[in-house]
Image (cartoon, rainbow, N blue to C red; front, side, top):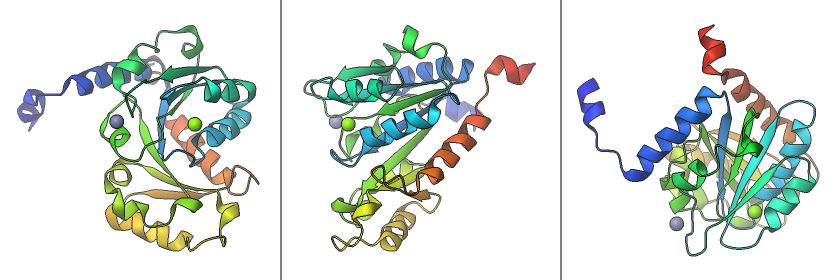
Length: 224
Ligand code: MG
Ligand code: ZN
């Protein structure tokens, strides 16, 4: 088995992602890759998370969009350093983009790295960025059948965030059905329901984050 694994030909992105993962793991940084459609509330979740981190967890964010620095500006106003990655014609982040950032000052002394991917449910799921976890964000206005239509993301995600639950009742979205659909394609997936607008359910998200952070300690500390 070991030989098969070692002989596996990793794609260029996978090799770079492995390098990113080594950097982050050695420094005890928990990196989470947030993936969801445009407008699903990824930036709002990063802002809310930044507020929770204040005085608790040293965090920074990388945020990807085709163009503009709007999201990095928003996130910085919520109190953590943010680096905007503009991807131009690309509709996803890749591991090289993250590797280009890991040595920057903003990312040096942190425990939590929030990576907001480009808004897109399809190819961001296929590109390993060297993160510890992928989180799928599904908002109420999008409909509860997205896990069935775009299973690739949900299969690879550890957690699904159902966002904008303050809008439940405004359309046919049923949170229980969304959860069942996600578990149909990804039986392992954990689910948190929240609204960044009202703050409802955010403690489920921060509890999940806190549990991941506890498990992520620098190699040197673990070896000691
Ligand atoms: Mg955004
Ligand atoms: Zn893409």
